[in-house]
Picture 1 (tube, one colour):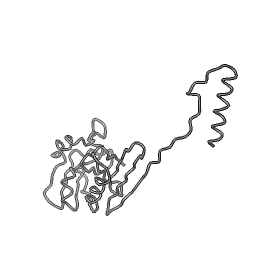
Picture 2: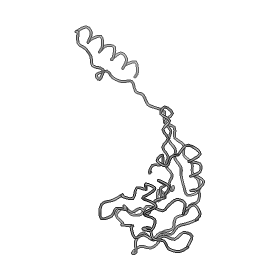
Picture 3: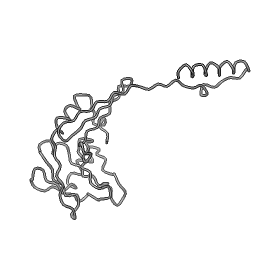
Picture 4: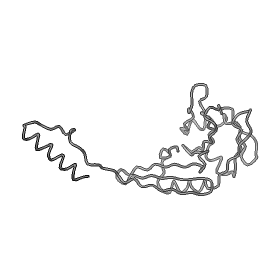
Length: 182
């Protein structure tokens, strides 16, 4: 494949020179250059960490989320996914069966962290995701979230989240902007 492209390029240059025509650089076929992006994946409990590295640029991209794709980590917060069309701005949650806390009470903190809260349209900005600050979850084993008043609570577990977060930081997933969504 490379030999054919090199011969084609040489013929194009020779033909151009023979007829006195300049060949623009954009007309020359480029040899493929694919950086060898390395990928690593680590599973622990209910969570999964994926890290991709570009050895040439040194760029690192990390994804930390539940193995069932129902929760994602981003900007020092965890987003729990419900149906996209559901407006979850009135969601309420309980950590380990404790006192109920409104999702709205965390909004100032989440905005300060840069959590992507505007996922939907003007009528439903939440896009069906309930975001909880990471520090609240590290001390808990489970969270029960009632996404809307007309829906029952759904329970999520954190087995492996804190350990994978530490592994991510140790493997270069800092600053927080290196974490992307799944």
